[in-house]
Length: 312
Picture 1 (tube, one colour):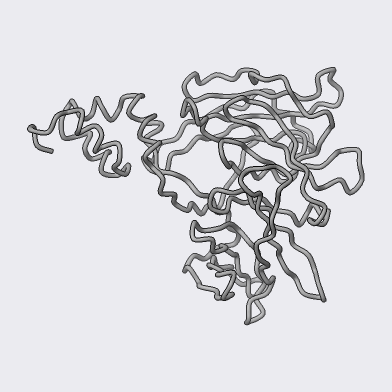
Picture 2 (cartoon, helix red, strand yellow):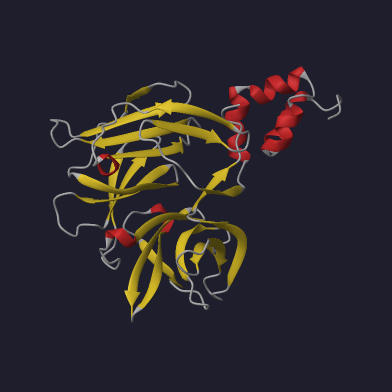
């Protein structure tokens, strides 16, 4: 940029740029490097970054450590998880969540553990990137019931983390979401509508544009189908059914939903036959057209992320 442009205007322009050129600009001059590396610039830069990307991964999970990874700048922070048990129930009694506080722009990891033998069964701990230490959540409001979490997959919508769960002591009580507000650090419950059948193992959570989506798999007329519901306007209990995805492609391959594009297209895992590689494809819900994305593997997890300079 020309030296004739006021530095304040240069800052405004750079806030609107994606991460890749900003990394290069850090080498132009000391003033730009100091600006781009500053915590205020990094925090404010997030506000201007509306374009989301899709991240496809095959993951290995450790129950002792978590990693905060920024793929935009290829940096990561290893976080030791406190008070992790060794028993077989750990995946069901402990769940992790990650998101960014909308007020402070500070990334947070939340760890929820339910200990039925404790006088205080719900233990909620929070790790913030700015402090890099674990502490108790600010709010002590917790659900009244014991729950068993599902696979631990999370979705963050509107600054709130959601997980699938069920009442531990009520048979077939599967229509429940546990929520965690990343700003107030309050836990909550969201009961899914009665129209969503209570088969927990076939329920999945995703983010569809800026809404929470619940995908319910079922067998109808001897055919596998997936019904897609979304929570309207972020209002708990107000769910609307959008469309249905066939569980089989026209060539007979088995289909599994794995996420959604910002266009609203579903991202599906397509498996032809046992022993064959699976592929990732896009499914247009209204024309029902399937487009192979040229990504092969065994199992896919798909997430959206916004470019950021955090961890720089």
